Amino acid sequence: MDVSFFQEMLSRISERGRQILDLPSLITVGGQETFESLCKALVSSRGEASGVALARRVLDRYKEASAEEKDAIFAFIADHFVPQGAGIEKAANDYLLDPTPDTLERLVRSVDSPRQGLLRRLNLAPNGTSDLVHMRQDLITRLNDNPGLEAIDRDFAHLFSSWFNRGFLVLVRISWSSPASILEKIIAYEAVHEIMGWDDLKRRLDPRDRRCFAFFHPALVDEPLIFVEVALGSDIPASIQALLAEEAAENIADPAVAVFYSISNCQEGLRGISFGNFLIKQVVEELTKEVPSLRTFVTLSPVPGFGSWLFRALGCGELPYLSEAQRNQLGKLRDQGWSEDEADQDALQSAILAAAADYLLRAKDRSNRPLDPVARFHLGNGARLERINWLGDTSEKGVRQALSLMVNYRYELRDIERNHEAYINHGSVIASKPVRALLLAPDKSRATVSTQQ
Image (cartoon, rainbow, N blue to C red):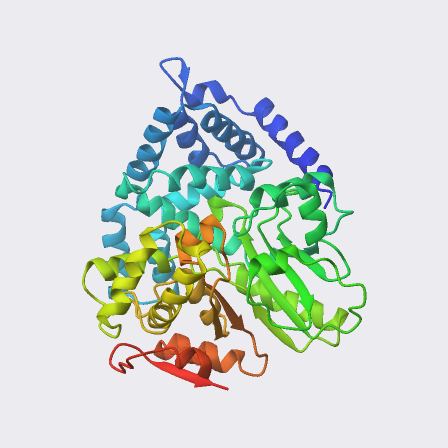
């Protein structure tokens, strides 16, 4: 994606803006240029060229700021760029007295967030979109300690959902011949199963039985937004260590199963902007065209919240469906060596699987959605919970987060829409009979659980 021409053109516009606008008279306070004075000049400017120049200077000033200065910058944006109550009241009264399209338009303009107007103007700058994504990344790190900044974050998210909608995204297959700069980022951004160097990456890109696809956006040159790693084979896998250790099959002319075993979001500044559902659907389409023998599309997914949930439930005296002996056995989970001891594994397996079924099928948040974030993602996209795999991930991370479990979610093309509607409208967790069979004490009052063959 060569956007050098457009970048050069925008740079020339920016330089022209500096020449035609008497910037110092607008952006200095006491002879000193500040972020605040730059922002005020930007929102009051009318010329396009001058706006480009000012936007670039605002973003440059932000990048040069210290952590403390950035705290002050976000506080300034939160406090200064807010709708004016008097204007809203007048526009609302005008509309109530005379409900016409003109008065409605004035009312809509009066409640429009001035922060969004500022961000839109900042996006005029060359590479402005990339800089704003990094600005939001900084903002996200401050939200826990500064809840008053959440309004800014909502404005960022609102604009990014438009700027990064599916129509602007480009699907690219990542191969061993992709530019080295992109391959390096795939290694760095892998968030599920660490890529252990170039040899490991080469295996994951092996064209005989592996695929990797990523979404890119024209405004973020050579920066993947999200990527998915896929394995092609004949069976649904139950273990990530076995899948990653497999040698490439020499004769895999007609693979029947495509396994999505890692999905990684790359840009923290785009948190909450959904790409994964579009990515999976388009990759399924691409794979179906390329490999007509594929009939089954599944994931091999982590269960990142299960471990902490189970320890909390044990501490609170919950899990009534387990016997006292089973609950006592679960005390062995505090011994870090249990996952390497076959006797401990055998003793713990039934209790952990029963608890996992309860966690995935019944445990809900206040919005009646599954507690587990990976479950929310795949069930919301229309998949069904196909299988819970014991010892599916015996890495330190897998044992710590999910007590070794991994899950297969299955995308049955004919059922995706129906499953999605059942999940969205009724909170239904669509699950296979083998998964339902793991439940030890059905409780219909806690959740809606549906079964598919």
